[in-house]
Amino acid sequence: MTLLREQRYFFTDMSHINFISSKRRTVRTFLEASIEAEDLRDILETALKAPTSRNRRATHFVVIEDKERLDRLSRCKPSGADPIRAGSLAIAVCADTTRAARPYIDCAIAASYIQLAVTDLDLGSCWVHVHDSMGAEEVVRAELGLPPTSAVLCIIAIGLPKDEDLDPRKEDIEWERVFIETFEDRNTVSTNE
Image (cartoon, rainbow, N blue to C red; front, top):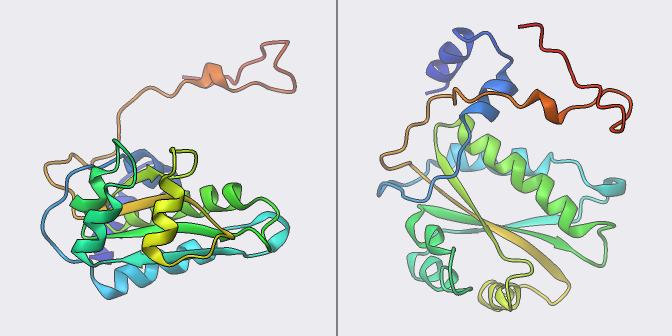
């Protein structure tokens, strides 16, 4: 599988990270398939390497594979959490608020790293936001046995995509959203195309 990913990358004219970020998309439906232990380890290792504010490394991750628990977690909020139940597994992205300088920001960075790692493995993912979702964070803490000092930003549902086109997007890049030196001068990046 790794060789195929490397071969695809070499046939593009973009950097590997650019290729993966172009390929990443939200996947809400998954095939019934388990995630290989080596792939899960790779995903978690990537998450653990994510930078944190002041290098406090206070993020932690709960891997959930039990289908009944995934089903209960998918009901943590009124809508938008169904992908948790559909995935092969999910990862709750958390941080210790007693140690983290910016717990939710640290979690967001780690969650983004997780999604890019998942995409690199030809798997799909869906970020299910938990923080600020009317009591969802407390429900997740209780279900996963987390202490009240654990911030829970999101749960990332992961699985083999069902009927999803995972080729890199061919969308236009909105260079007009990038400015040089100051926003006021409206000096945008030239693409020289």
